[in-house]
Length: 255
Image (tube, rainbow, N blue to C red):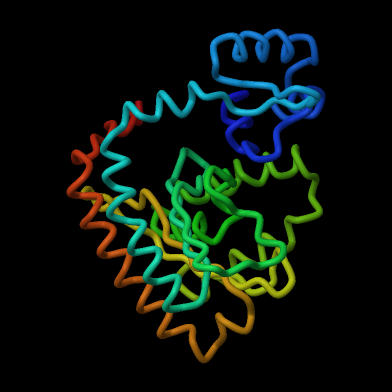
């Protein structure tokens, strides 16, 4: 949990007390664990800074997955192309359990005030349009369990204040048939997303375009969605080239 939360705020870092509260540890236990992570290179601190940040060891361990580097080389030019075509920020996110993590992004010279998603940002599936696009492609019972779990974590971490906005975004996405928001969580920001399927037909990722309510409009929605679908199909082919066919665990016995 500590490593996941550290990586989620790689740019901004965590104060000890805030991180301890976030992961549900007492301050002393959290401090001892962080000290161990710092010694092993999984976390780091900077001079004259009280915060903790991800360490170099995390990057080094990621190098043990060369297929993802190859996948990135194939996907990033596609993000660049669709971002420039639509004048939006193009982001590619992987599903990680009940979360979604932004792993590649092309900003294409676009800057949007209030857009907080960067490479490495982790969000619950139900709180990002990319996550909603993935949820739509899951069996209804599984999607419902994830939404319930996400909701409980949202209440624990932030309280209930955003639940109405998140529900509005989810209903908007259900009506559209893909991940979609217009100002639901941030005024003036619009975004849309389509899920990407692996070679077993499971949604493992999502491609998101983030713009404003002047770049993603009712007039451009259908054309942009068609373009998104076309690029996600290309990325699905890239994934099949780079990764082995995923092995799915057998369903638990009803007994």
